[in-house]
Image (cartoon, helix red, strand yellow):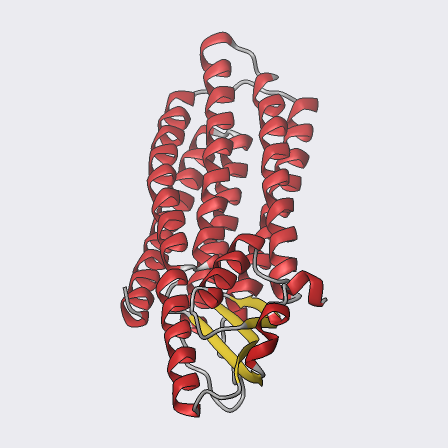
Length: 306
């Protein structure tokens, strides 16, 4: 998949998230007000947070597609990381909001009618969110889009919220256990809070230019050293900006090699890295000439060099 196809797929998937969340907010709010269930109205508010998150993800994906310019030499990929951080904060805020509403309802439970409509809308919400979240996460991983993956994880957490609310409504409707709804809602809110915290940690790492994972750097090292003309490497540095990965390193070559030969090897290395890690990779190689006799001592491991 080339960059243009990746951008189109990301934009279409972001549209899907916005549309599904808009429909769910309207349905939950209308049914919640009709039934008089605070839990359903709260769930509509939670879906409203999801809608805001989806709009942020949609904006971030479009923003990240802007090519590098004089203002942003490395492109706009960091906007995806920023949107992930905002979504994580929204998840935590939603969890706190649910706990607040649950505690308030636990203190003053009241009987409600037509709860079967609430159960039905929660079932519909669960099915829609399972489908959309899987699509978002799948496309997010396929295109290395943090914004879409974060939005998918957000919707995935909303599935558990909907399950909790549906269990509470079912308990009230069948068993008359009006205390069950706030208890389940609090438990689900804690799960959501944990997911949001993990996303905040990950987004912080990306926004502060943390290195790519050890697994990625090992792949890069393997590609470097598979070429017989490469005598060693050092100063390997990596980071990410949204779907884009930035890689630069100093690679040692025999000082007797011609410039054209060195350039050809560097092009081959860049091609192999993009083939292994996707087209959204920016590779900068600084070739260094060394004497061939020093081959046995020049293969410097990155960790030893640091």
